[in-house]
Amino acid sequence: LDFVPNHTSDEHPWFVQSKSSTSDPKRDWFLWRDPAPDRGPPNNWLSNFGGPAWTLDEKTGQYYLHSFLRQQPDVNWRNPEVRSAMYEAMRFWLRRGVDGFRVDVIYHFIKDAQFRDNPLNPDFKPGGDPAHRLLPAHTIDQPEVQQIVAEMRRVVEEFSTSDSARILIGEIYLPIDRLVAYYGQDQAGMLHGAQLPFNFHLIGVHWQAGAIDRLVRNYEAALPSGATPNWVLGNHDKSRIASRVGIEAARLAAMLLLTLRGTPTLYYGDELGMSDVPIPADEVQDPFEKNEPGKGLGRDPERTPMPWTAEAPNAGFSAGKPWLRLSEDVRTRNVECQSNDEASMLTLYRRLLALRRQRASLNQGAWEPVAAAGDVLAYTRIDGDERTLIVLNFGEAPAPLPPAVVLDHAQLLLSTALEHKGDWQPGDHLLPDEGVIFGQSHGHLEKLLQGMTSTNLHAEIDFNKAQGKEV
Image (cartoon, rainbow, N blue to C red; front, side, top):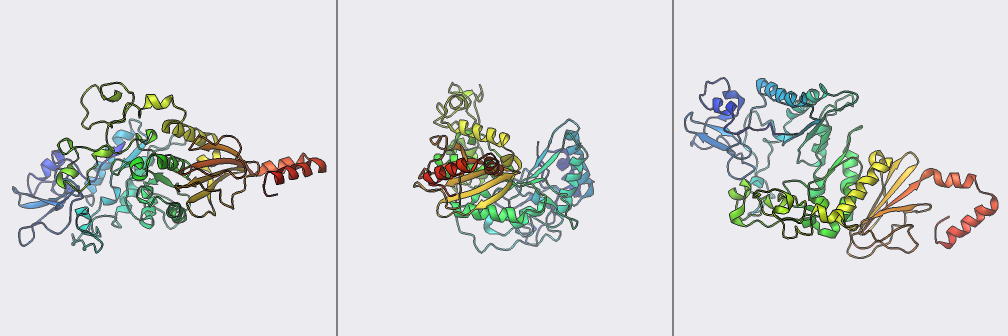
């Protein structure tokens, strides 16, 4: 379940009671401060959705903090009663059998105890997201938040058994060195934080082989021992992958996501190649866009309805009127049509997912980089004697396999282009935006040699030489 405990609604009974009086028992459940000497906000903190993060309550004469909309007051996570109430809310759902929680903005919970001003961002450019005008030094990723994450982990583990584990996922937008801290490694090396601190770095990385190679290497190197990595290609807050890199490159992105080590997270519609849908001003729903119109900050374009069929009305999404319009290509880009198309994006995703289930190396194996250059990215997944090799061409021109790739006794398992089938032939090149997966076994050649006489061994060597393969 999606759990949003950084804030409540301003109509929630807790907040209604909190703002009723400065002496109310629930006053300290939220973050109230006296005005500045000029009667303005207590400090310079900004809302993530534009404008100050403080709203004045005329009745009590104090400001309350809201990191997002003014209708979303932040709770005071330093208050033990708040923590207890939040953990009981988690238990309410865990008793009903949920598998765990995706915890919204988990790195926002604790704010600076002294309420100090945030410093100016020297890299801010006029016209950008106004929330980035300041560096959030005192409003996110405070050291004390790690204790809360550990407490949440203990709550979900109350309901974990040997047959059914419960999971804690954290929504976190931080650099890698800070992101991995949310695994909660203690001095003994034990992990007591979120099992999956969301790794959103693929969303913002420069879509180029070298940049992605560096990202994967840096992330793998930063992970604490025993941590499960995870990768996210798209979500409800960022432009869709097909709009960011193009529809053909989105096929390559699917192979990347589903062959890297760890847990992949899929955003609905990406498996169809859905793109952002332009939303006219009079149809905007996102409060962010309404607060900061014309800056391209709205998130409606990536939140449009999922198209299930080509039939009217609304492509099988709803018999009613959706809040947002559907894409113009909905008659061809829908689940029903793509299910019957062997070359569709949906078919590619299904084959990739099936391959993950079939091959232990893709599902749980180690990750090793393979030396490559230019527009090609390559790596190997290994589990026991099973090896799976992934080669991805991020370029706009055909590209050969990297010299370090040896394909003796390898089978081509899947291509994003779905054009290459069977064995890879000497001289074959990757097509533009093509990714390929090869299957190998460490033990294959050894078993082959054990069953060969000198005569047929030499025949095998001659055959491989004739095919241009290293011997």
